Length: 125
Image (cartoon, rainbow, N blue to C red):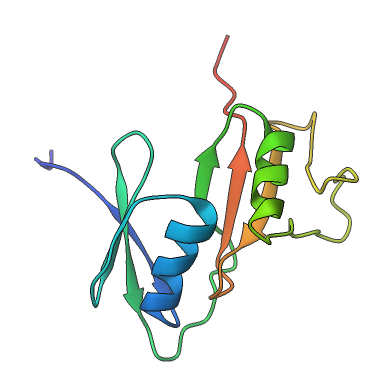
């Protein structure tokens, strides 16, 4: 069995200062700036934001932010200039949220094209 002391995730970005400004100023998370920035996640985790000159956005959701109400989160992010990603064939409502098919969720992209979501966490009964 592996003995660990902590864990963190990471995602590549095309430009670290741009990513720092986005996560700090538009999403509202704490970020430690630097050549490799550290994004502090609610609940105590973190993710690093590292530069990659030939960055290509991931083709999956790289970060899920748990919220109390997806509609409220969509409106808050809209105030910061963000719009939900709308996927063809996905049953998203007029706000851009998918509801009633698992957790209520909406997807957005960062300036590097990485997808993140806001969702209401479903806990087992």
